[in-house]
Structures are given as C-alpha cells and as structure tokens.
Length: 217
Image 1 (cartoon, one colour):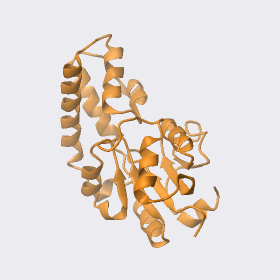
Image 2 (cartoon, helix red, strand yellow):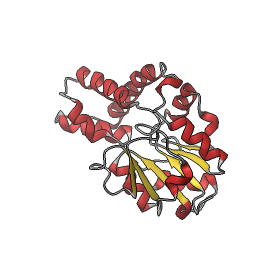
Image 3 (cartoon, helix red, strand yellow):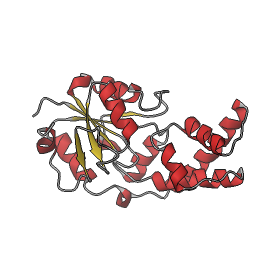
Image 4 (spheres, one colour):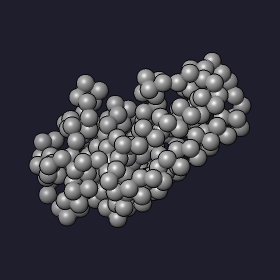
C-alpha cells in the first residue's frame, strides 16, 4: 500500500462521457432562447456549475435575466439532461474504469466521487457502480465550483483521509487546479496539452494497475 489512502474521481469525462448529453441539453435550451451555441462555446462550460454555465450562455447571447428566470432555465436544462442520462447503461462506463475501481478497492484504497453534477447518484445507479464508492460528494453537498477545492476537501473529509494522502482523477484543467489547491496530487485523464499541470497524465484507465500508477506520483 502506498502513502496514498484516498482516491477521488471526477465523474464526467473520467468515469463516463456525459459531456455529449450536457451539450445536447444546453444546445436545446439555447435554441429555445434563440442564443447561438456550438461545441466550441460548450468547452467553456466544462467543470463549471449549472448556474455558472447558464450565465456564460446568457453572456454569449448578450442577455440578462432575473434570478427566478435563470433558475427556471437551469431547471429546464436539467430536465432535458436527465431525460438523456436515463438511457445510460453499464456499457457507457469508460474503458478500464470499473476494473481500476475494483482493484483499488481490493487494495484497500478508499474511493470517493467529487463532481459538480447534482445527478451523480442517478448516473452511478444507471451505470451500476454505486457500490464501488465509499462517498459521493456532488453539487447537492457543495456550492463552490472548481477550481475551488471545496468538493475534493469534502470528499477527503467524508472518507476520513488527510487531503495530503488523496489523489484526484480529473479530465479538466479547473479540476486539476482544484486538486492542487486542496493539497492533493492530480492524475489527468485525457489530453496532456490541456492537463499539463497534472502530476501524471493518462489517456485512460485501460490496463492500469492502481498501485503501479500511484507509485509514479
């Protein structure tokens, strides 16, 4: 067992690719509001809370709304998104993730989810992997978006592990920054150019052994 005891995972882009469903839901809402919105615009929303994402869309459309109107539209987006993710199955888990989580648990690591998504429990349930997590910290438990470290510090607290003994798995630069601000190591999953601040960058979890990976940090 290494010096690390807790592993914290982002959800979107790390465990499952729900980014396409977020984009489709935001696109449908933007179309309803007659605000131009494309995949390039959508890049600005990654790792950002729902309300902050909608603020960006309003900015793109040079629009203002009352707090009530904003909340109504955020609820509308979420309803669209939930309708899409209801169709998720175990087949949507990204390659190698389930094996990595299972091996990490058997090796004695504590595992938490640290995501801004308020739909995290539903997604884990649809994927059939809820029982692989010791704690789930999502947008219903924290209010500050990454790069604020709140979600990861809360995850470490729920696991009962010192932040310095935790490793975060992230696909977004803001998440890597949040991990470092929390005093944790960060493993980037995805593009090395985007995740250059990570301590280690992997293309994915395929064939990766938890112990061997953590030994590289």
